[in-house]
Amino acid sequence: MKSKTISIRNLIGLAVLFRIIFLFATPNLSQDFYRFIWDGRMIFEGFNPYMSLPETYIKQGIQPIKEAFQLYNGMGELNGSHYTNYPPINQLCFLIAALFASKSIYSAIIVLKIIIILADIGILYVGTKLLKRMHLPIKNIFWYVLNPFIIIEMTGNLHFEPVMIFFLIWSLLALHKKQWIWAAILLACAISVKLIPLLLLPLFYQWFVKNNQNWLKGFVKLNLFYTIVLSTTLLLFLPFYTSELIENYSNSLSLWFHDFEFNASFYYVFREIGYLFRGYNEIAILGKMTAILTILFLIIVTFYRKNNSMIQLTTVFLFGLCFYYFMATTVHPWYLATPLILSIFTKYRFPIIWTLVIILSYEAYAKFPWKENLWLVSLEYLILYGFLLFELRKAYITKRL
Image 1 (cartoon, one colour):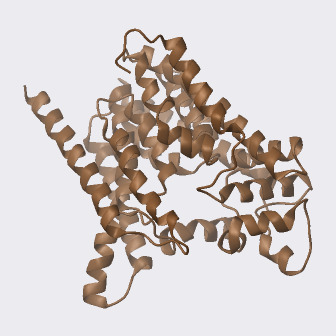
Image 2: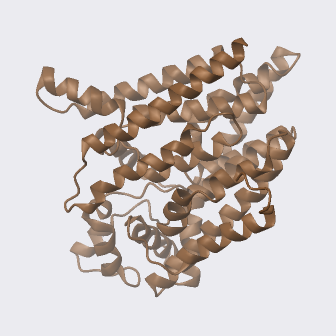
Image 3: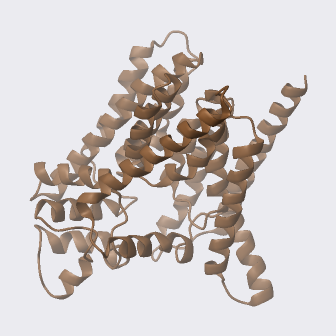
């Protein structure tokens, strides 16, 4: 990053080379790719992946797709007993894998990895353009592209955050060019890969309203922006629509708030307090409480923090998203890809530290059945929060000076 002798071209070459190293390797830190392949092949065979459970077919001895039993065994009973929660453009990626590799799991893995590598190359392209427009160092993009954590988790373990991030950064680039309609469509595409950008919608308020001399005109434009985003997202879901879709999809999403726990931060503290006073884990109550705290935080930064320039907007995106993860019951390592990419457009670097220390959470994967070492989780967040406080204090002092 600091070397003046290594050219941008060589850094790009290294980024591609490191990803090709993982191209032919089967993911070993995640089972999700089995469900990706299952969903894609279901669509390929004419089935709606949102309407059926893999375990239903397996228990009846039915094989609706090629290698159905191998895929079910690979994804595991927990995954196979729940409806899919992957949005439509994500499903399109799965379908592409089925089109090119409908009979081989290994070949499907390679196709999926090629999609992710292409998405990372897209991030490199649009991210560089946005950095130029924001008058920030172009090399900032390599905090993401050359990050070992990103290469291992995305290309190595097949997580689709790069596809979502590609659309998200492209949307911000379009917004910076004042192409707000195109930005809304691209943001909808990002949401249709991973739902997490939905959290960012309130934070556009000042960009449209405060940046417009006519408050009413800005407010109308903001609502049109929201309308395009939401209507495009719904349109993308339309090919899969049935009367049961909303219920099935909602049930799958609710698991992240009511059932799953992994690598959490403040939630684990709240949980221990609950144990002391109630004697049992109240994840259903705590999940709702942390969600409410996140909503309150987003409302506060929407109206009371200045965020009407692109640097301010990406900064408030970064802190809004990180606050959500600080409160969440589940923080899988690959979630950090989005805070990391947002950080390169700001002066904050704590997500880079997080991508390093989150490796401590991998220790849970070494046990079967897996079990977290909360001392290691505590160490992870102590280092992270220590560096975050250091950066916040530095920013405060700089602002005062």
